[in-house]
Image (tube, rainbow, N blue to C red; front, side):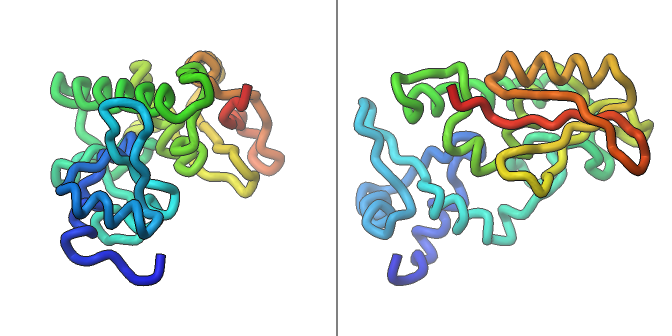
Length: 206
């Protein structure tokens, strides 16, 4: 890309689906984003446009796309655990999570070789914490709240790996089973200093 996106193009980028990167805009706006390497047109019908990794970086550089509690301003965000005053689950939230998960499966179908939906796609590898949290929340696991119960997903220094913390062994085992079903590899480890158990999870490639 040789220049920053225009204000109109930035609005299209900021409004991209947070789970899939699917874009909505005028043909001219979408074509310009493709020219700048910020979007690609999917070869399969209905030929929707999606953010490229560079487009996702532009979107996440915006203040509007900074990590936020799921209760913020109507923008869907998977709950990673530990959010301040995270709201209790509601029917509306369940619908949002279900829709985001189905959108992610569709993105896998459209971008993975052979249309495979049983393993993570490029977007998930670029957004490990959010992707793992979405898989857990979509399966019904509660994120960590003020009482310390539930999962907590955090980045790690290791490439393509996140840490999943929980209050006890049953929670960790249940989260591991969910992630493995969702196409991740997960193993239990012990934190040397605190002796706390946690999961190290990474997207499965094949």
